[in-house]
Amino acid sequence: MKKIGQFIDSWFLGFYRFIRLFTVYFLKAYLARIFNGFEGVKGAAVVKMYQQRGKYATIFVHAGVVSVMALGVALGPTLIVDTNQSRAVISSALGNRIVFAEGQDEAKVLGETVTAQDVMTLTQISDKPRSDDVEYEIQSGDTLGSIAEKFGVSQDTIKWENLNIKEWKTLKVAGKILVPPVTGVVHTVKSGENIYSIAKKYNADAQSIVDFPFNAFTNDETFALAVGQRLVVPDGIMPAESLISPQAVTPIARTPDAGSVSATGVWIWPATGRITQPFRSWHKGTDIANHDGGPILAADSGAVIITGWDPTGYGNKVVINHGNGFITLYAHLSRIDVVNGQSVKRGNQIGMMGSTGRSTGTHLHFEIRTTNGIVDPLTLLK
Image (tube, rainbow, N blue to C red; front, side, top):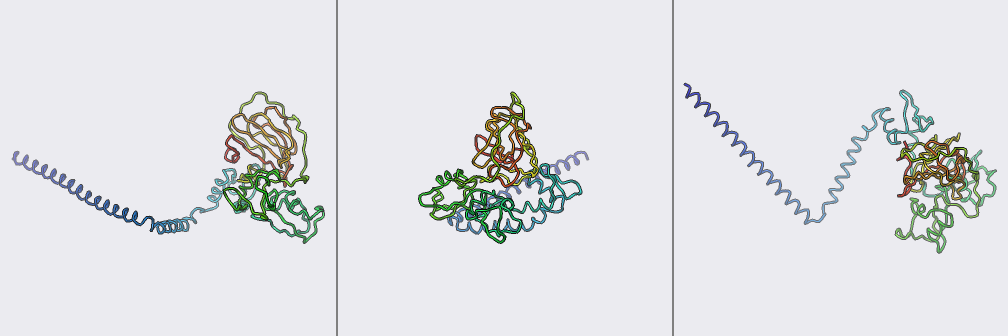
């Protein structure tokens, strides 16, 4: 009986091994046949497509676009599910500078309170400037300053575009004026002029003329201009014209010298207010506005290298070299509290917010410059 049992065990063990080996062999052969067939089909398809040399590329591109559109329609409504998620999306889009209070429709933005409706309205405004002048009909109560603030340009810009108007203190109701798309000058090109001569004439940057999205050129390589075309010169100043904005102030060392300092590399907000104009290709800084004014602070420690009046439009400005490859500029100040050569610590007061130079209202124009060019301050501020 013992031998019979051993024989049965041995038989079953051998049969199990046979089945296992047969299964492995069958699967390998079967899968190899499948993969060989797939490779054959793929090879034939590749050869066919190569022979056609992109004949069917348009079909694939159109199919891809249709697929993306279908996904957008199908998944778009799920991106905003409720108010809380909407707030999260808004806060994230603005760099987490907006914090909504629980159960309220208000948010804090750089020290000021705005409603959720204001934020939603703000996000619907396009970043692009207008392409041309707007013909504005003067209403009762309008002043040059109120019209400039309404359109977000300087008072001087409107004055320069309407040289036929000699008296701006008493505007005629129902009269019409032209409002340029951005602060600066709108120039009609004359024979022999180019972007460099025009930039020099209006004390502007030739690159800003090229960067303005609605300026056209007869040759995009050489930036050639057509005689008679209208060209927007952002931040340009009309020659032989005095600026309306308040003029220079004398820098006074109200803030003591900080002695030996080193930049921390961690930036703080230089002012309290709301962002009225972000960094753009033709606006190399961030505008922070506060109708009550307020102190301007050094965004990081460094040495003051420039103070005083800037005739190109910055008004009263302060420039700080932080010694680590970064330089900051603070413009349109109503008062300057530091002098050239002194050092300041991060957070020291360097002046007061104002509306000097080409400015439509009380605000700070803040720039961060590096050895590689000017950068968006919102990418560095904490």
